[in-house]
Image 1 (spheres, rainbow, N blue to C red):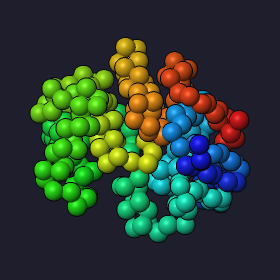
Image 2 (cartoon, rainbow, N blue to C red; image 1 turned 90 degrees about the horizontal axis):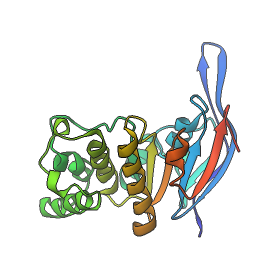
Image 3 (cartoon, one colour; image 1 turned 90 degrees about the vertical axis):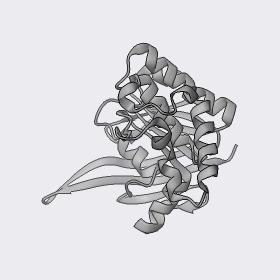
Image 4 (cartoon, rainbow, N blue to C red; image 1 turned 180 degrees about the vertical axis):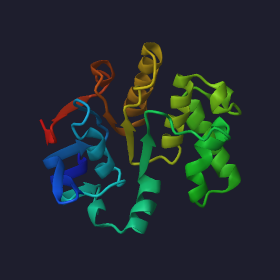
Length: 223
């Protein structure tokens, strides 16, 4: 399979007064289309920073990041926002659902940036919630859902635009063992049955077991 993500000689550092604080150093990584990659490593190793580079949330201090044929490290902020909305679905540790919106409305949010009609948006949302097994919770608010159900709504929201990549940052970090297993099984099914390319950041070996490939980050270096 061709590589969908190509990272070359990527470094990231921050400035605190006159002090340079390195986070990532000379990262080289290729992710094949259709892969399910677990990025592992201890807290503070740079996993989330690397995920943010791939998702276009942040830009490298040096090096290149290509997703498909797009050099996202060169895009303007406006072009990057447009690209990100179309090509990346994010799943966060704490779900990031809007508490005043129903499951349907939370999943619909990314589609409001598209030109889809209301009827088309409904079809997409209902399909996404069906895929994650929550079609019977479509009108429920986050407070009416379990943590595992909230994360599945978040996965449906990430999935609803049919993105190129699904990027998950510690998606089981706030869940009990059974809910974590369900969420990782769902991500595995999205990969194996729907062909989604997924990159998940985790420090939990049990979560990483669901992935097809693994890379380890430690002190800003990739092994």
